[in-house]
Amino acid sequence: MKNSEITGLSKEELVAKIAEEKENLTKLKFAHTISAIENPSRISKVRKDIARLTTQLTAVKKAESASETK
Image 1 (cartoon, rainbow, N blue to C red):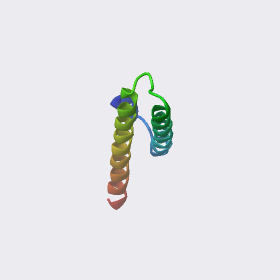
Image 2 (cartoon, rainbow, N blue to C red):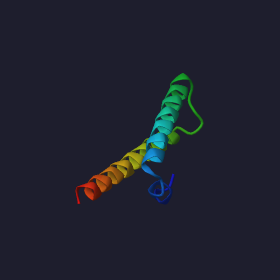
Image 3 (cartoon, rainbow, N blue to C red):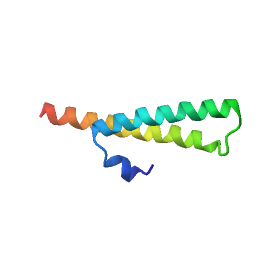
């Protein structure tokens, strides 16, 4: 997932996407534990996507709280 795609998401979409990616990560880890998956680098890519989404969610929350205090 690209950063340009992430910045266009709303707060609710970010929360939903984070939950979806965490579930995907759990499935990938489980599949890799059972038998080696074809592309194990997908696990780190999903972890990085979760981090990007979480960072954007934090930025959105900070922007909302800053606009509410003014």
